[in-house]
Length: 116
Image (cartoon, rainbow, N blue to C red; front, side, top):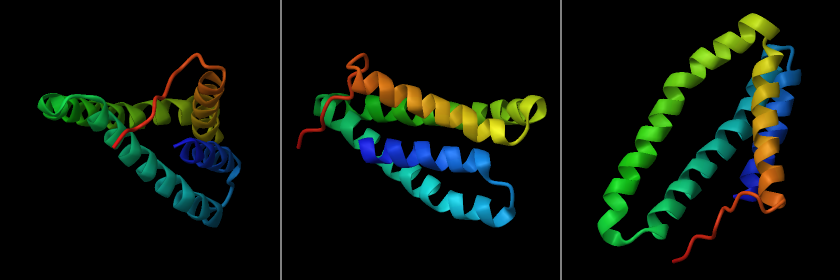
């Protein structure tokens, strides 16, 4: 999971620096792969962390949270592009992921471990 976060950080930084279409397309490959893996691993971790009788509830909350994020992200991205340009989207995402990595490394945010 930490590897996915690092790939996301680097990909978002590269996204903020991309100036041509082929740059964007090249960045989207690792960005999409790391995002997909991260989402899958987080969902697996959530379902393992609760009792089997609560898994349906946790999955519903997980999916609704991701749906909410997918609804708000385009509006936030459009606002960033309008005010600061295209590079602000990648920069803001990289800053967010970087801050999360720092918080985890400092022990201020726990990620836990998935158990089988």
